[in-house]
Image 1 (cartoon, protein in one colour):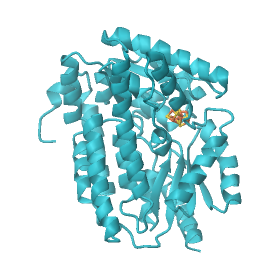
Image 2 (spheres, helix red, strand yellow):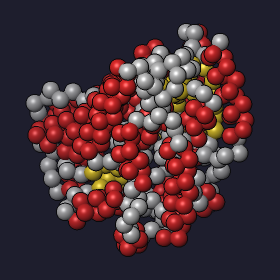
Image 3 (cartoon, rainbow, N blue to C red):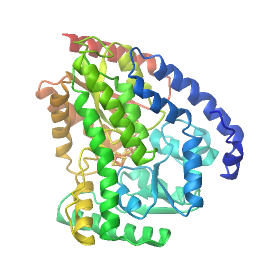
Image 4 (cartoon, protein in one colour):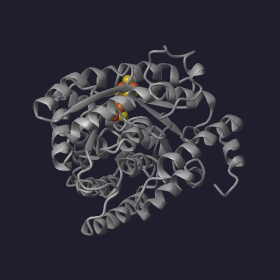
Length: 426
Ligand code: BJ8
């Protein structure tokens, strides 16, 4: 970062010393994970730049937008409907939860056997090192897993404003009605917050912006089906992670710029790895920035990741919102239907998720699946068993890795992934 952002961080209430510690770890970790990858697409430079300014320029943009009267909405879950936020001229940002920070402080509020994502969110809030959290006018929590649901009861006292979005656990007509009521209530809350109205035009604009972003990710996903793989899994994941932070219009254009370059590479049969490299699909818990541990291990061991069945990935972007409605009610219905299709493991039953994994593996030419479960995440760790059985039955070798953000088990994971990659090589 060339600019001195310390006055801005200080104004946002960050603990500058702790924040320096965080940036001191993040910068080198990013450099060692991303910049040495062989034959990276040149257009990934934009995403390098975004990451180098993730606590700088982007935060400055948010601060300026707030000065101009826009509201910033922070979220931890892909269930928060970005269409509504954008329709009201708000900005939705993902909040930091992808690393361990101030774990001891977080464990004063949470049991040790809480998943790393929830502990990470608490750690970042308690240590005052997340400028996205500080810049948010409201944090949206959601009734998804028990861990999140109960922890928001405590989290509300750590942040100035928390709104909890109620979510169904089943997808029948009652579940849909509940989700619709929750979105209507959330829409009214956002109208109050922003002083603006949800009109047909505003909703259509919000839907178009998010659909454009998702469509760009679909284009990227299709290109990742090529062999040799034109882009690494780490870079694919990075773009999926930045999806939650960047300005939507600029992000969409930047993803298309990468796709243009990948199309040229594919035409020249050029890849980041040789043809025939073992191809792996990742499935499971979301990987928020800077959670690159498992993908880095997999790709260092000579395999390439071709897709992510994850909320930071295809689960979060796969479905577009129909923009055909002519009334606010019809457009809200379309938004509800779109979100109800998310295959999160908090739903019971959640059979469509395994079908999605299978169809992704087939269309991307993945030879195997690595199921990623965060330790103490009951929904995904429990669902991993039936998912693995079904995938193996369908002839897709599957490896289950349950881990957290720590480095203690890296050696053990390497051994297991190496054996799995050998299995894929046949
Ligand atoms: S829609 S996956 S982003 S809830 S890892 S906190 S589930 S114990 S993150 Fe998620 Fe929304 Fe679902 Fe997606 Fe709980 Fe599991 Fe922790 Fe998790």
